[in-house]
Amino acid sequence: MVAVDLGGTRMKCGLVAADGAVLHRETRPTPRAVTDARGGGRAILDALVETVVELGQKATADGHRVRAIGVVVPGVIDAATGTVSAENLAWVGTPVLAALTAAVGEEVPVVLAHDVRAGGYAELRHGALAGTTNSMFLPLGTGIAAAMVVDGSLVSGDGYAGELGHTRFVHGDAAEQCACGQWGCLETVASAAALARRYGARTGRTVDGAREVLELLAAGDPDAAQVWDDALRVLVDALVLYTTLVAPTRIAIGGGLVGAGETLLQPLRDGIHARLTFQREPEIVAAVLGEEAGCLGAALMAWDRVAADVSEDTT
Ligand SMILES: [Zn+2]
Image (tube, rainbow, N blue to C red):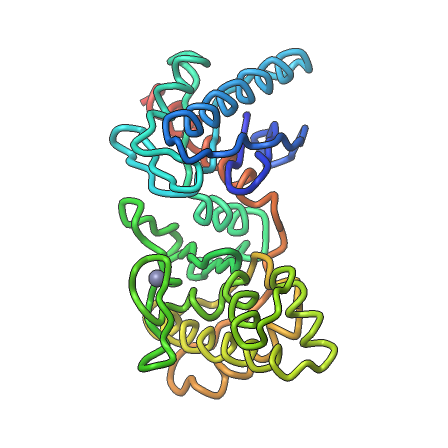
């Protein structure tokens, strides 16, 4: 199984066996998506196809047979046409499925997977959500989206589900405009990007991402403490809402902010505990697969496709 994760400045690639064992891993630079959507988007698609073909050649040389391809993409996947629109890749209805199929042949199934859902699927099968039937993977990174497991199934909502980052938890004058166009979204306060931006806005100082805000927090900086408390407050609101709606037994937090460890997790547990009355209280844990989750999840989804095709053939 060849798996490639396009979410980030480098493509994370792997060869993954049917049991989820990663046989080979490597990263490659993602070409820059220049403002010319045609040129930049085309270069990224060409690089993806080349990577998939070369990894397939490596698999063959190592004595494996490539059964399917799994690719993680940020943005919106049109499952019916196999096209992808992703602003940061300069892809607008780009025919990713057709390009990969032309390169690897019709007989090798290609699975395009949403980045957060692929990560959530890997955590469900081999990570922090293993053994659960109602749970959530919530990476707090540049943005915020959720992979939702409800009654044993990963919810996709035709590709639209899980946008918890774009629900409003800040009202009135304090609400900031979100990249989605709305105001006061969870993502404007509690993403890693928001922490750095909000600290900068308060202090006039430019910081090196959320990592530096967390260092300032640990050093007792009062402005860092304020933006951190704001983030925790809306995260508790979001987790209480999710818990009330779909009753997860476990929530795994991932993304850059989970590097804060118990500084993040314990206040979330305490905040939720104080707010729930009749609802079932979820465990709050750290995701365990880190940056590899998306790539692994795409591979597992592609293996599922192979298994489904085989069972179809035999019935
Ligand atoms: Zn939003």
